[in-house]
Length: 161
Image 1: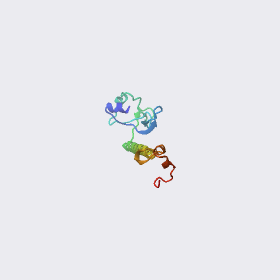
Image 2: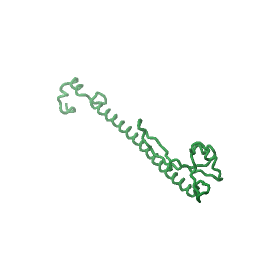
Image 3: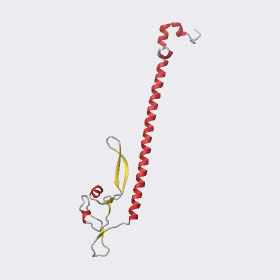
């Protein structure tokens, strides 16, 4: 409705809030925008012509009231100060949402880096452990020692033998 009003040339404002929801199938986080006042949009009308607004697709009715019983109803009007306060509140909520989003993205990045560091450390320690029991890097496996010389295997201190 807000987009249709903008396309028709009307200045409109629909107060919304955003939340992050987890998709039920793939568990990805999705941003959703919901109206604060469901079904209500504030439209700035400098003139008192309401028929073009009611003709826009998606607009059902204008909220109208009668000051005196029997008079023709007229749409509600709000002072610009009220609309500005609502806009500021929405802007403030958006800034908070974006800050939280940036924080979440940074946390995910840090978590990915930690996982990579742990994987690299695990690979490095595995290489060290494998090198201790292989013929690489100066270490000799016990079976290789037995094959070379049986007396070396029985010796407690290799240096003195």
